[in-house]
Image 1 (tube, rainbow, N blue to C red):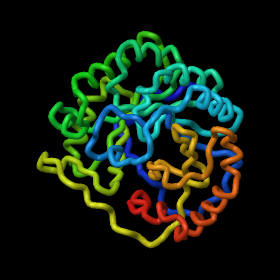
Image 2: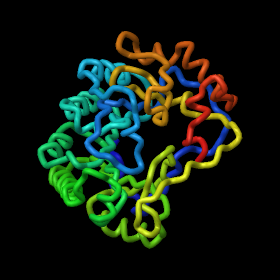
Image 3: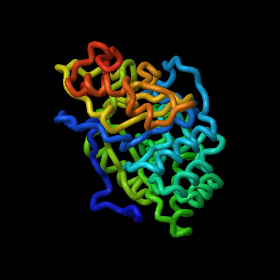
Length: 310
């Protein structure tokens, strides 16, 4: 079924984490999956902690990724994203993997900073059958954008998004083009100007609260780069991530969520096992028991999670 090309409003607000609720039993396979095709990135964005990660950088081998996609295709699920703490368009065989996933009937969503989606790549994405692509863009002016996305050129990203939009329409592709932006202190006038600038070249604009990771920065109300204070520590509460979500790192490590970005919690590895085996094994079950109670005394990375404080 084709995805909707437009929504009633150009700007859609999104919560980063669902409100606390009773967790349900885990299904036999994760419903939503992020696959880290590469842990490398070509930018040094001020609101990202990529520079502070200590795990070795690398790309997922094509054979491992293809085998994983084949397993996912045989299971019920909502969607996959071929991205996690890295710029997936640095992977040399990304378009092949997207085409393989789509051929197997998988709904794929890509998230990118947009710097590498040139015309040749855009044509490959359209030919692959990719259903959704989201560009992470926080500004509509060069000065502000390049303050945040260090190492990127605003004009290049604008041109890449416009080119993909034009080629998509010329080909009659159902691909949905999205812009994603994490809001910190921007006022409603900024939101309106942002939407006015970008609306001609995208179908959906999603605005989510800024994920306040420890030690990050952002652009404040006065236009200067400022430290972002961490959120306050709340009372323990249940976490839904281990009950329906999985992240597979480039080396095959399986982690419970995106926030555990430095392999602090590894619940198994898909080099020599299936994702289903890891998902239903003892480490995942123990984490679910803790997450269902909101008791993370034995899981220090979860106890220190900034996402659950927001």
